[in-house]
Image 1 (tube, rainbow, N blue to C red):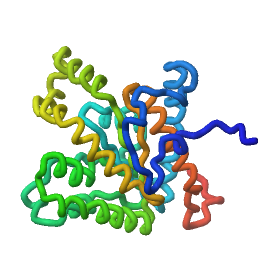
Image 2: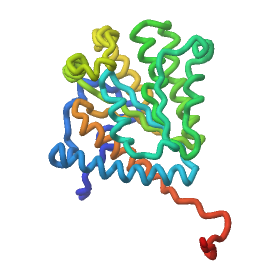
Image 3: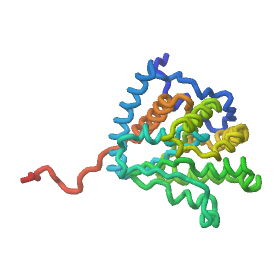
Image 4: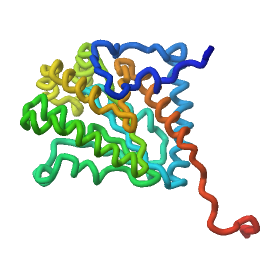
Length: 275
């Protein structure tokens, strides 16, 4: 009998070819919390310290590449995840790329052209705050391109990610799953706090009205593009402290699994004395 506790990678991973209905995934649940909120936060802090060491090892070994994809509805916590989970890591080896609406120059190329140039190099962690999936999600919901165009992009993305993995990139994709009730509270908080007015965009309210359309679009993405080589994780994100704990746990476990080693010095340094 196996009494080992389940890991977030087992609970929240979307299996390949699974048909996802987000109604089956509770954005408020905290089943793997380690006791109280404060105890879980302490565990997250310990994971963050471990992540700092592993990220330094990743950078020193200069062998593996890590791509973290963060997607979710407005206010789902993409910025907060980056701020809390990656707090303290060496910025020399970590980059955050935020993808906005494509420029005219970017639109002159295929939809993955602007993405590929930002993928991580050896020894790097690159975090996509929104990503190439916007070119399915937004264009589908807003009807920006014909269906026959965006429908092909599922296969294009799967092939693109397989290429990255074959060349040494580890891909982790997190969908930050919040409820419309939680989004309402977070948007209202931005209005109520003058120091957060800069974060409020009236356009977010127009997007909020399209919530059911976005949910259907995300369900299709999660069902079609969670692969053995580039899995999606559906992270319940109504509780920020729990969201951070899950993502930190998955990141640390993944990096540990790379079995990294510090490189040996080129020359024998055993006899060197600093005077």
